[in-house]
Image (cartoon, rainbow, N blue to C red; front, top):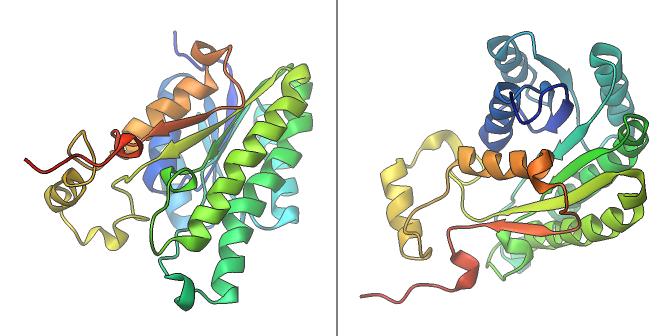
Length: 254
């Protein structure tokens, strides 16, 4: 028995990184998964690799019409929607003085407007299925200052706030809404192009993080699974920090 047997889950940003690991794990736990992304070739290839339990749909999360089509595709293909994972995001690295209005607005469009549109579009389908789950990917940076990520941090803080509000609004319909707040994770967002070896990433984050290494995308996927299955049946409106202890404080040097 899988933890998501019989459920249908839509995952955004699913073509690579954390979303890819969520798609693989959710399918392994019995879910039928719709992989949504703008990286069409990678998304289709991953869906084909996962097999009959997976489908791919193009989705620019900042576009309202794309959300309508993605939800229609999901219900047309699998008959219902039980879960949404708002994983898609970008992390422009700019100090305040170097952050253009266009850069800031694009971060808002993808990181903040995207989850808003997704929750609004998914809520009626989740209610029609008798309830369900929404997992919004926020960040450690939503809860603690991190230089050169002003646009990213602002949008992720908004995700945490929206999560709390929507959890209150949808609880009566049997829909639970929580936020996953990763710290540093070894994905293309943190390590573009995979140019830095994991050993080097571990050494760098080992100076910042009590557990002494960077996080793995599969570790984030396991927490997203927890928040999407009955193991968390009495949990809603919460930010779940998965950061190796980073938020607790920086370890002192020996």
